[in-house]
Length: 150
Image (cartoon, rainbow, N blue to C red):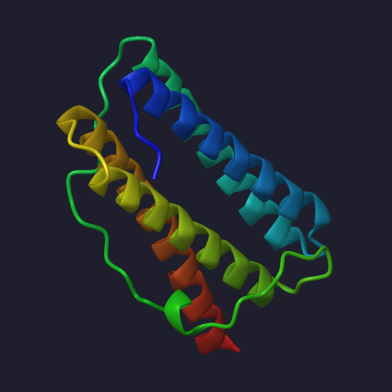
């Protein structure tokens, strides 16, 4: 695991991760065949860009305000087979990809938080992990609703 020399390095890394996530969701939206799917993924791309903007503001001297509560985990993603991102995915498959991506982001930020002794950096990563957990929960609820309806 990388050793961080400053909060600036941590924030630069996290900003890059949020941009990559926004790019991923934008590609998924652009390739989606179902209008509702396009809208869902564009919304998540915008959220990731909002996270990036918040991190850039923190880097410029602002304060990080993490989510004050622990996010529930339905663990649906734990029991699903991995699916590769593909332009021809149906809505269910796209939700699986999104859940797995958010789960991986949560784990990354949790591991990064555990890898540092700097409490400020740890708090930033814990907050980012909670943001990703919230995204995963939203995808899990949508997936569960889809299964119950269909």
